[in-house]
Image 1 (cartoon, rainbow, N blue to C red):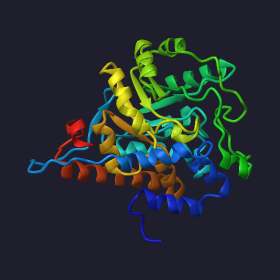
Image 2 (image 1 turned 60 degrees about the vertical axis):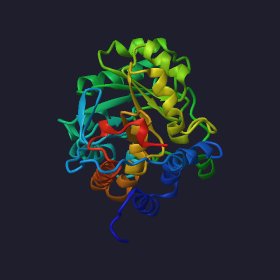
Image 3 (image 1 turned 180 degrees about the vertical axis):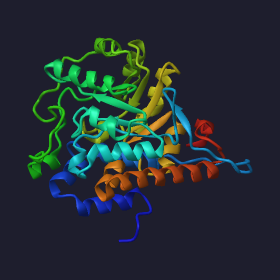
Amino acid sequence: MAAPVNVWDYERIAEERLDANAFAYFVGGAGDEVTLRDNLAAFERRKLRPRVLVDVSTITTTTTVLGIDVALPVLVAPVALQRMAHPDGELATARAAAAAGTIMCLSSAATSSPAEVAAAAPDAPRWFQVYVWTPRTLTEAAIDEAVAHGYSALLLTVDVPYIGRRERDIRIDFKIPEHLTVQGDLFGGGFDATLSWRDLEWLAGYGLPVVVKGLLTAEDARLACEHGAAAVVVSNHGGRQLDGVSASLDALEEVVAAVDGRAEVLLDGGVRRGADVLKALALGARSVLIGRAMVWGLAAAGEDGVADVLRLLRDEIELGLGLLGCTSPDEVTRAHVS
């Protein structure tokens, strides 16, 4: 096959290289996968509105997220079980994100420890994603390790009191490969369903910014701000939790309006193109996070594949900015999308 020229090419290669067990896990969603499909369709529904005769001779894709300089408005989302996609797993992803100049978010259901990932890219910015397990001592130990190894934010995923019904996994009788060690109890019913807004204050006690991931409504966005969230991620967990909810992009403006500048707003779900990133920025996101797009690169070519996916997106964003009539992500406004 010719060299991949976009993320969709990487998905095709990944499907060829992954076994059926792993591919079903990474590609699938909950229920009828309505929300999974709608995450993609939402970007097709939005149309960019370019401005012309603008001096775009110099363009930068750089921006900041929670005060951290990043080379492009794309972060690497927390994805569990990455060694199921490639033997190097999260270590390859960490190195690729570091080389691309962006932030990696490590899942607390990873197949590498926070210490191992920090050692793989010691000078790179990294966040630690928090699932709250029962007993909470498991969560506390993981956070302690992340704090000790330089993770600069805690990303609390709030849409998983119970794991969604992912029917592809059921049909294939999904199993975590026996040779893998997983940091958290992802499928053992270990999520703490008592988690509430007051727990943001508990997490804030670690002295790091708290990012709340998994919001789709103005009501929850306001509560997140009231309880001290530094940022929120508009997300439906890649369509893997409650099927039939809004596409992330469709919920974005509602959340942005409710936050009203009190926290940064990020988005994940359905991002496959640089143009998708521009649409999210125009609707008020500071940055996006990519999950499946990263996994396809990882499955196809390990660290080099993840790096190339990030390069392709950066190049598409740079070209898109110029054709949109903008010289940086900060210049993209609501007027640039319909």
